[in-house]
Image 1 (cartoon, rainbow, N blue to C red):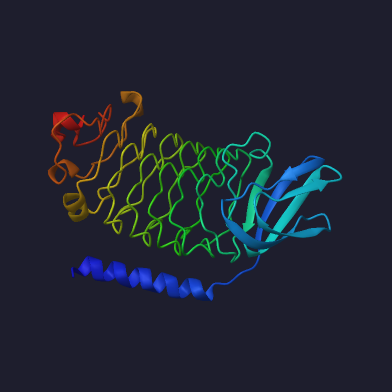
Image 2: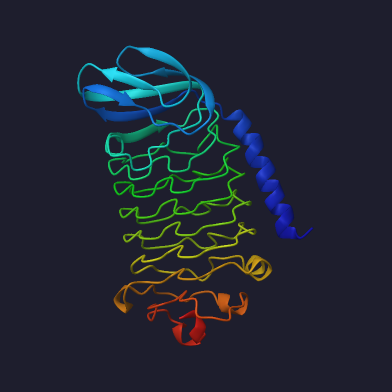
Amino acid sequence: MTRIQQKINWIKMHALQEAEKNVSDPFITTWNMTSGEFTLLTQKGTYNATIDWGDGTSSTHTTGNPTHTYASAGQYQIKISGQYNGLRINNNATQKDKLIAVNQWGNVGFTSFEYAFRCCSNLVSLPNGSITGAEGVESFRFCFDGCTSLTTIPVDLFRYTVNVESFYACFYDCTSLTTIPTDLFRYNVNVTTFEYCFGGCTSLTTIPNGLFEYNVNVESFRSCFYDCKNLALPTSIFNLTALQAKQPDMAYCFRTASTADSPTGTVQPIWNYVTITARNYCFYNCTALANYSQIPELWR
């Protein structure tokens, strides 16, 4: 076992041990409601949850999408306790603009974050710290896609979600994000795809050094930073040993719409570790990179 693999195994075990101690009930969100019937769109499967609707009433649910009728419009805080699979708003026309904040992750046994907050354009804040109660979750596919008011990602957001395999388009089109926390994915050693993860994050200005250092099982970084304008790249982003072993898809990873949007800095020579036989456009229009002239033609 290599030294890096030993370190990864220790990180994963330590994160799970900490997660067991970090119990915080319930899962709390804040919404701007209109009067009338409201449906809480939920991940598939059965669950056993008590929902406090924030207007003095509560109910118990075990399957499907719970519904509730609000007598008047206003801001309401919904508190969910027990076992709950998680939200799945997924660009729903009547839901996506109502959610304004996640106040507390709680410990409710989330089963998935796929499409959870997709296109929640008025979601402005997430709680500080890590997502809890989600140790078995395997996918954050399109989780925050289109959350255009989200300006920051909490430090250690994914610390306890050590079984995640997909961050496909997780933050796609989060156009107000400017930075990524250091070691955001440090504990997510099972991830196989970061496709489109930060694609379209047009306000993103920097990538932390060593962002994917511990993600040694990735099979695709395709379009990961697609159309991110004017990024300043650090000297180290990827685990080069893992790139050589896994040979991930790197197509369009840093592609920009025009040379005016080109990232700057000196990019890692990933072309020396991943073999391609046809043009992949990984660095298309990235002419402002200090070592652009060293990038092989098939990568441009």
